[in-house]
Amino acid sequence: MIQTYSRKQKIKQLLAILLPILVTQVTMQLMGFFDTIMSGQFSTEHLAGVAMAVSIWVPVYTGLSGIFLAVTPIIAQHVGAGRRDKIASSLIQAAYLSIIVGVAVIVIGAFVLDPIFNWMTLEPEVARVAREYLSALGIGVIPLFLYTVLRASIDGLGQTRITMFITLLSFPINVFLNYCFIFGKFGMPRLGGVGAGLATAITYIVIFIIAVILMKRNEMMRSLGMLGRFEAVSFAHWKEVLAIGVPIGLSIFFEVSVFSAVTLLMSKYDTVTIASHQSALSFASLLYMLPLSIAMSMTIVIGFEVGAKRIQDAKQYARIGILSAVSLSVFCAIFLFLFNENTARLYSNDPQVIALTQVFMVYAIFFQLSDAVAAPVQGILRGYKDVKSVFIIAFCSYWIVGLPVGYVLAQTTSLEAYGYWVGLIAGLAIGAVALFLRMAHIERKAKQGELAI
Image (tube, rainbow, N blue to C red):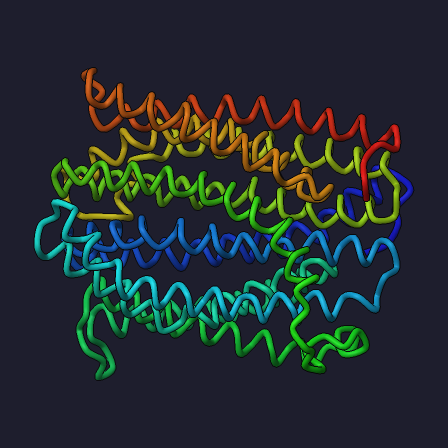
């Protein structure tokens, strides 16, 4: 990354960082997209089983991996401030921490999965697929968390093309392995939805290995000492990562887990409703990669400018990012409205699932508009290392407003399952407004020199 002096230069640098992130995020989301589609083509029960498993795994992974996203603003600010000697230690210490977290997830998962599925009122085959999917996924948990640290470090340097390249290499591997293990091709066992979990775990291992190889061969990263040595554990570094990362992880957890909670609450409905809800949510999540990628880009460029104490430049980047996200989300909302039937047919051949998915997708349109503001503003605030406010707003908007309103609507009105989506839309809209107001406050403090950097 370099200092920029005009809006045109900022747009050019932002695009250079954003486009690889977008490709990376969309490709990673497509892995889950193909898990869902290919499991749905196997059977509706396996689609529902994967939906249940994903509803448990995604909030756990995204919440815990969010801790290590702290490495991105830490390294970006090191780069902006010229503290090159501190970059390698930030990566190495976060990697140590990620191993501990990965082991904890595996151990805890071994004890809690059976009680969770015994509590849920699922059809036996749906419960079996969900349980075995998560067990297979556990093989790749530690490599996944390690890769998250490596990716956050690479992105913090502004080298987002490298993570794009890694993801593009891994995507066809994931789809091929899905094909083999779901449908029993090329001599592999025919595992259905469980095969999607095994394929994803192997893919996690592959992307970690590829990342290590590329970082070892990158001249700039070698000069910074990244992956070039081992260090003694530094609790001071762990404290820095946790102080920034835990609020990031919690805010992501509260956002993602509320969708999983809705999916779990929908276990009272029939398998067709569960499958339709998950199909619509899967596509909405794919479209969310646009504002999310802009948010991740904002964290990098804002962190770089704030580290160099160029607050006005950071503010200009923020406005460019928000405007871009709003424009793209309006386009996506129009697309989703016009082509919802075609999109629904990608997930299932069952006419009932297709019809219900179309209705859910209409509600998903409103997610796009609120996300256009909420996502980039979250990225901007993280660039300033203002993470506690994002966590508080996420908790209140989803768990104090969104889920309770959705539950009441689902239980007391004719909306039934759709009521959950209406409640979440309300919570997301309130959260977007609160985040924007917080961003304006932080920018004023930074401009007046009252913000610790």
